[in-house]
Length: 239
Image (cartoon, rainbow, N blue to C red; front, side, top):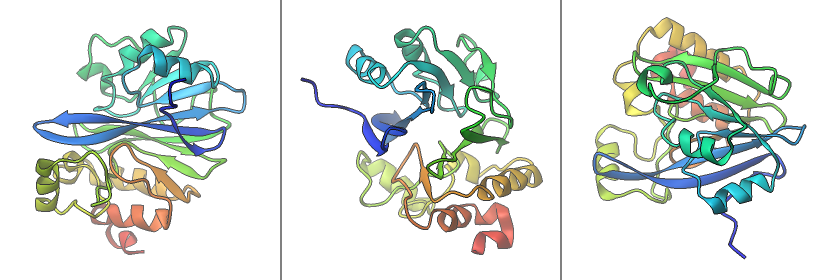
């Protein structure tokens, strides 16, 4: 029997799958999140590439109802997931339709959660820059925030990084410090609107954070996230 590739994060609710990424010579991992609703239906958040084995493992947990591309840089493997689960509805972050013009999708996400998951997840759409947008999610039952690029958390314990990634992140002050992705940090857009969005996320009653890149945040989560966003939040980030 093939060993399971999904990591249980919250029993019968949240599963994770890491996979390698290469970008300009830097190597690191990304992370897919699988969310199970009370109905038994599954949401695939920021999907990785699917093969027959992974598709079977996911299908054994329940029917896939939705595929979510939650950020402008997190849609590449959506077609692979669509092929594995052709009946699933595809939801995308605003702006993905401009970057991936051939991508098939059904719904563009906003601040209001779709009926499928409105009773269980909150969400907030945030435009950090002209090209960087993201929809943050809050899984209320487990008090877990799910992000992609709004916070990255690379440390010496993070698997899958290479020397170039570590060198670059030390140079920009992101190594061993939870921070937004460089694409956010060096070019925030409408700071007032960004600040409002971040404050709404911080108002959620969360105690852990699933990230696409870097170590999961399972202790002091709200304080760590506020500190990561301190430059845009101002004094609030010093809590």
